[in-house]
Amino acid sequence: MAIRPESTARTKRIPRRLPPFLLDLAAGRDVQSAPIDASVVKLANEHRLTGLLWTWAREHLADVELKTELAQNDLYVQAHLVRVWRVLEESVARLAAAGIEVATIKGVTAEARWYGRRGERPCSDVDLLLSPRQLDRVAEAVRLLEPDHPWVPSVAPMAAKGRIQTVTAHLDDLEVDLHFDLLKLGIPTRQSSEVWSLTRPYLLPGGGSVRVLDDTTALVHLLVHLNKDRFQGLLGYADIARIIACGRVDWERVERFAGGEGTTVSTLRTLEVVLDELSLPWPVELARPSGPRARVWSVIWRPGIRLRGMEGRLRFRRRQDWIALLARGRMLEALGWWFRDMWPPAPVVAVRYANIPGPYLWKLFRGRFDTARTLRATLATRTAREIEPRETS
Image (cartoon, rainbow, N blue to C red; front, side):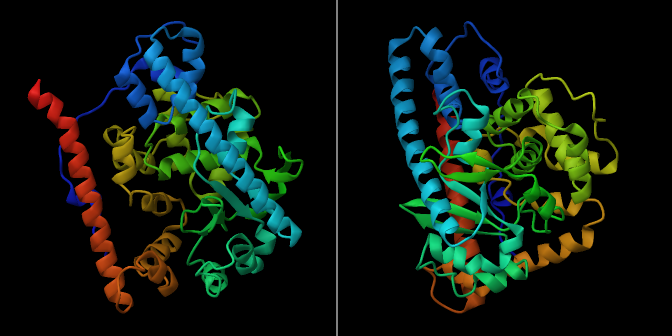
């Protein structure tokens, strides 16, 4: 069994209260004035809100030095997003030429659809969802994106058996994540065909098009993704607030979709956490989640692990397993997947721990041990840096 970083680094965590100003930015509220200093900028960067902060600062910030820093960062982010758009278009074009259909999820199209300008929502890579009607063409799709990808010979059977739900290719030095399952919870998404039928074409800057999720499906997907990410940063909260603000969410279908997957509790509790944190109203069409599953969820994803920024990206990484385990009517599926996940396919282990020589079991256990040790050291270094100013003050 993997050594879990969250159990190997027992450093006491100091609860962090984020400045109300950053919560207002994430919620999309208009703030006329706020005390901004280097610590606020640092927090905004950790929570990936510097783009939204710069949108505000252009009109309101008087500190020239901080304003220059934010402007320079925004130019860098915008330049990177241009690259991401280019890789998205190239990926879609390669696949379309072979008759392979994909939709883009999250990423640059999320910013274009729900944010005010380029640069407000940073993203590092491209996420594509393969049409559920073409899962038999997985290997071809991977080969088109990255011809010498090491999984090309084995990806088709791994995907067909549900052993993997995504594969990461590389194009022009950027990652392209090709998803075979939208929610990617280990257990298969039951409503994949309905999800795909509700996608619609989106015009790309270069003149081509790619399919995107409808607003309701996108909201559920982002809620699940935020839950899986341990509520690391405020940008995930900002996504939820902006989709809702567009006014096109079908709340009845949100409940029906989540119920069809058995994930009503985790989906609606995540929504509740976001709306309560941002002081936004609860949709009158929905009943707030309650019952034993909701109470268990509230213990697993308690307030102390949320909005930890970089620490959240390093810790609590196995909590996402509980989403499937808490899904109504899917316990046996979840347990089966959890057991199989303990023993990933040999091609996955060979690539993930390519630097470790030896047979499967040695690579797996040594690789997991080394990964846990590296994460533990990173957490210890980070904690020492945070504690040092308090000790010397």
